[in-house]
Length: 67
Image 1 (cartoon, rainbow, N blue to C red):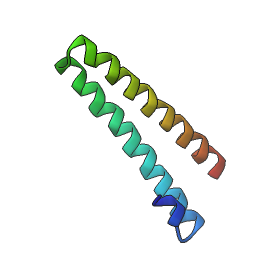
Image 2: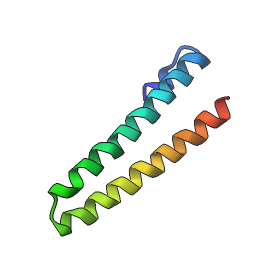
Image 3: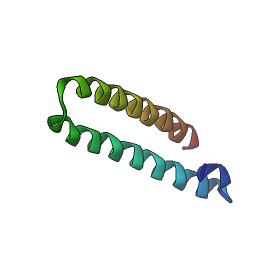
């Protein structure tokens, strides 16, 4: 949402890069949670990790097109 309200192309690029960093950080925190969870919850966690990874890939595609 933030990137959609960018005031310039450079502002959009900066916000997209922040979005990518935040998504990668989410994967990091999800990975840290893994040892604390039961086996049933780990499968849910892995689903979240996969979705977050897909989001990073989408954002990476956007950033590649901005270059």
